[in-house]
Length: 265
Ligand code: KIV
Image 1 (cartoon, rainbow, N blue to C red):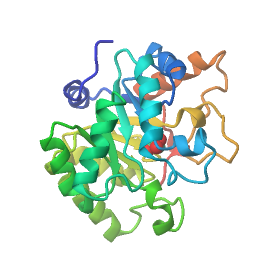
Image 2 (cartoon, rainbow, N blue to C red):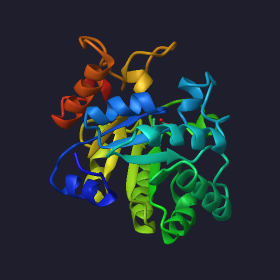
Image 3 (cartoon, rainbow, N blue to C red):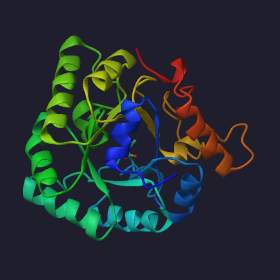
């Protein structure tokens, strides 16, 4: 695999080749993820829950993400490396520029991810105007879990589906170069994926997105809680962690993951 870029990912979308994405937080897992040919690695603020044992992603700070991004960058060879902008680290465009600058300069990220729709358009414009590629995130926004009243599927009624479609188009227009859709009904995710030029990566968003992402600890079954419906344990039937990651990559590529039982209506 040659170096993955925002341009090569758009080409994959155009050629209808599915994009495999996994989270990683250290160099050793990153090396296995690279061996499996996964195209994109996300240092998600999910690290607050799976690494730090927090109740939510809210306590994660920029220093945590910089530290883990630097660890992942040491194991990275070809994948595009995205780092999450943590809760309250992009409440103004000035603050967002400072945070993104640290993630890229100190962490070695190639792209930053932030949660939210219409309220983030100015920030996305400012970041991209400064040469910082942005991955947007719509649907279930874990940083807004208290506002949403829990981890629930989003976009089930006509009005929220309409807003999500408008937000997705506006984010692309503002310069976002990738979009994550989390916990969204399959048909809505399909509509959004088909209406955008940029790659749409789903997690609990059905099989029609341009790619899929999972938290690596979830797909290896390393989780003290009941995993969400959209998770599949790829360690089942695999002889090693490396093989489980390869099975995940293959299942995303051939479209067998996610199946109907991992998706929402
Ligand atoms: O923090 C994270 O790992 C994420 C993915 C679940 C998309 O945002």
